[in-house]
Length: 301
Image (cartoon, rainbow, N blue to C red; front, side, top):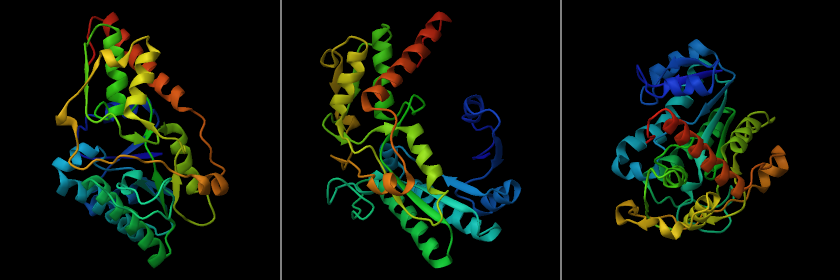
């Protein structure tokens, strides 16, 4: 297995090497097609999973052009690189539930029209449709997984779920007093990332390429996530959470919930971790990390 690394001395490389020992790395950049061709020629893969993106929705509003270049045009650069090196490589594109945005129907399926509400969502729509286009135009084995929110203890601290669980751990341990959030009413279909990665792999093992919605079929609000996370450590979220307008998006997505019936029927895919279990494991992971830092005399960030 190979991983694509952008730039020299990438600060995340050491973390990935620690979490996933045995992976070999190749340099490449979704902004530079020649580097992608060189990486493919070096690695000679059977399958390519394109998860590269500016994936934090809030940041995409501040860096809209760069989001389009990486999250959108980066997909066509990778597809063209595959066509150049070996058109038989199977390709997975990480599409997103954010493409649905201002939803036209509930729940969302593979045929639900898109109405993205952020530069990230717009770029993902381009990446999705260019994947379909190359599949239909060139006969490539190219799939898109329209993944709803997938979380784990490895989620970045900038994302609201991990921001909540990390704050819960710090508040419980006396390292923090309150948590500032934006809207509390937004509802999402949250699932365990490990289940979703298994779905990605299953898509590329089928006889023919296709696109699939991957979701739990349940929706929960940010408020509900907070309530479960704080309750897990015996606290009431009302005592610690404050709202701050600076965390509000220019255009909010109010409700996302997916119908993964096609994936269940054709891929045999199911979820294994419930929403309460997911919240609990994320809180426990952050508690363990901060306790370890405290034992070494360091307050974790």
